Image 1 (spheres, rainbow, N blue to C red):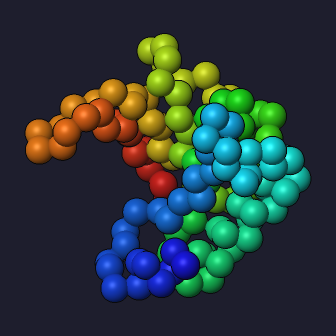
Image 2 (image 1 turned 90 degrees about the vertical axis):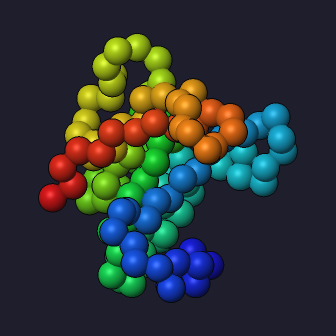
Length: 121
């Protein structure tokens, strides 16, 4: 599905597996166990890589340490989300840090996420 959507665009940033737990809205993946979640991320990222794009996995601290098997996804770009505090608390290397979800951008109504992208080479 994702590859069909991005086919006609020149993509230079990573294509990201972004699983988020939202128990209040009743998503079918709310109770996904860590093994299955990790396998889904690996499958997605491998397919993205086979298509010639750079794969990434987006997560917060709890998902990184509790849900994912980081050893199985370590070969992909990590996009780490932590909005609290002055500096990230994630022990491992990551290439993108989402440091806020309350940013403001002219022309966009409401809050936007703010990120810093580090060297991904």
